[in-house]
Amino acid sequence: MFTRIFGKPKQEANAVATLDRLNETLEMLEKKEKVLLKKAAAEVEKAKEFTRAKNKRAAIQCLKRKRLYEQQIEQLGNFQLRIHDQMIMLEGAKATTETVDALRTGASAMKAMQKSTNIDDVDKTMDEINEQTENMKQIQEALSAPIGAAADFDEDELEAELEELEGAELEEQLLQPATTAPAAPVHTPAGRQHARPPPQKNTAEEDELAALQAEMAL
Image (cartoon, rainbow, N blue to C red; front, side):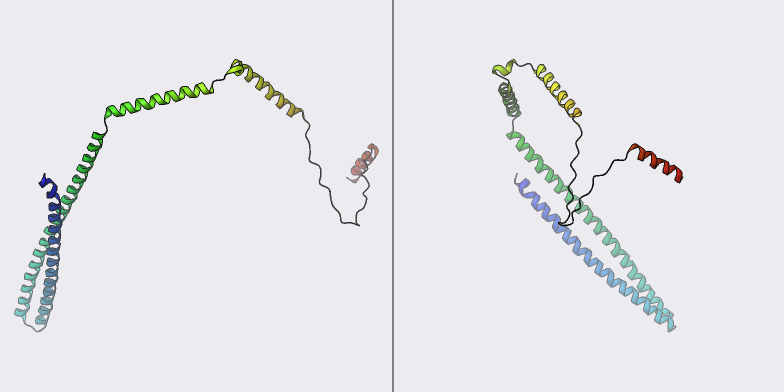
């Protein structure tokens, strides 16, 4: 039990410490690689100088040292690749462990909650709720039931009477004449009001004369 309690934090601390150590080693290898790259480039420049000076043997020696540096650079590259691989695997294992621990914690919490909740108690509670709901429904129905003289009224007769009233109201609205709003009075300034003679209605003779004049104009 104590191992289970104290072992996980220790393992997690070891994983973090290992990742830090791998990071430090990776940085050290990268620095060495940069130094070797500079040395290789310097040997190339020396070889060029010896070539211009017609010192072929010295130029070849420079190229040999450049090859040695390149071999070390390649070896350091392989080391860095292995360290990257190890770090990725370690980080994945750490994430997996944390995920499993989280799932285990959730399962334990759910199990504890299920222990505190008995299925029989749940069924009993639901039965009580259903019983109370049914009782309240019966009470509401009893309160809404008509009593006294209102209990003798026929609902169908009341519906028919209501339909007759609605039909009579609709018929009355259809028979009413359409009304128009009165025209708004025109206000004129004081002292400038003039009496307008009422318009005279044309007689039948005047209408015939106007129609004849219109035909003559055509």
